Image 1 (cartoon, helix red, strand yellow):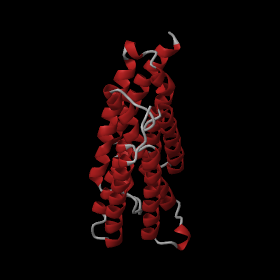
Image 2: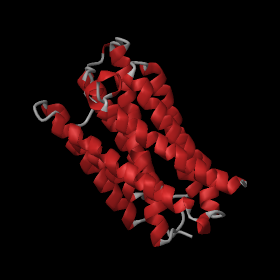
Image 3: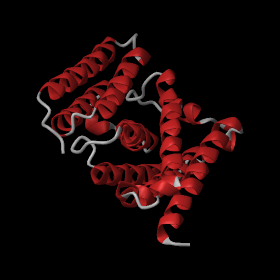
Image 4: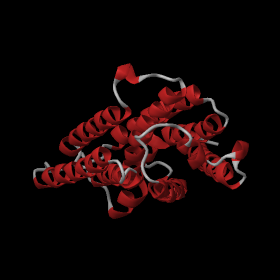
Length: 252
């Protein structure tokens, strides 16, 4: 078996690994609690309303599209897939392992694993040159968009995972209130969005942030500072996206 075929099979098997573990985590559920129940058990505010997590369905559909596309014999020597395939396998392994750590209360290891997942997605994103190069219509939906959406969500999820861990460890936030920290995190998210808007003008990535920030507002509708801040953050990201599309540079 040559290296290209091994890469294709690796992506298939690791994608199935991630899907099976995520499905089992909520169907069984793993260790007696589903993933959302564990998230809700932490006293943290940087968590959106439950419906927002339905984005995982879109992420997995997109990941399956990539997996099927990269498995085609005609794509065996595709340079973009060669550059990303092994990293995609790493993201799926990290995704599945994160589920195990999260469900069994190994929250420090869950954050480490989430950071591995984030780093691997960044490598994929940079190697694909998303926002810097053109893709065919087919590859937009099977290669580019999946990782724009995935990276956008894991950007938010990493911040949420970190706040959950700090809550679990009993960190007092240096005396800063939970509401203030959440406002800071929203500001950080908008800052990341600004960088992505003016360096990549990536619609998929930025719309995921809008989805997440608006979801924080919905969850905390009874808490005016967060309700207003979440919508403000979502609105700012939309404005950044619009501005970046107006002045986006030509792509090769």
